[in-house]
Image (cartoon, rainbow, N blue to C red):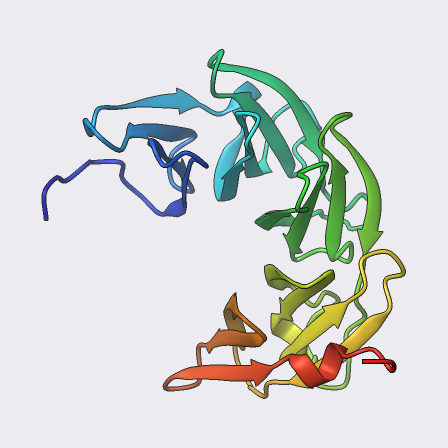
Length: 239
């Protein structure tokens, strides 16, 4: 241990694309922290307009930091993405991502994944029928929504909770906790290319990493990692 930084609480931790900064979005305090990775100097920035509770954050190469906030802000209390310009150190915009069809709306953004060119941002939603919201990062507007239906394994919830997202080739891979499944989706057509049952009875699978053609999944009820070979599942007929 070379340094302890008193940021408090729990939340989302991410590095900047250049590796010079670390951002910690706080789920206990209504602010996030900017930490210099070289000097360990840090400062806090309040969430905009009374926003509270952060579960995810991500900075793109253009210097815009997206912060997934559970409540408050300019959207009548629903969950939203705050857009913070790290170069000018100001908030530029906010994007409502809550589920207007739910009463009450208990949704929250929980994971963020950009497209390769960063023109789109995929937002995995917690406790939302919306599933994955797709954001145009130039217009800061929702342009699509990839939803999943609860299956026979999901006995208690109206939502599936895509808690983790990753890319495998051109396909979107999601860990849908409440369905206890890994799903490979074509983001253009929303068609499921593959679906893998992961099992479970409680909180189910949580985190995901793609290494080559393998998906590595954590599962709260398993004493280890689940490894799924994706190569055969997404191979096209002419391959």
